[in-house]
Image (tube, rainbow, N blue to C red):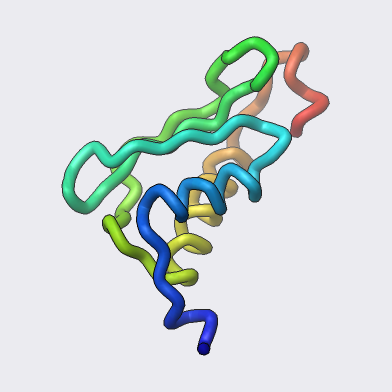
Length: 90
């Protein structure tokens, strides 16, 4: 099966993203039928590093969609300057 044609549900896509961003915490929720809010956070303190709303998504996505979401979060993270206490994650 072609990797680009494999489908994952929204909860499974979120799990893939949690694994990708570990050791940071990652959570996402759909805020509309076609978009989501993603949050990266410090697991120890629960402090939010970044939260991004309006990321296009679907209830079922292919691998390329998941990669696009990861890239969007990473691009946002690249512009973020963490507090001194969290710099070990950056």
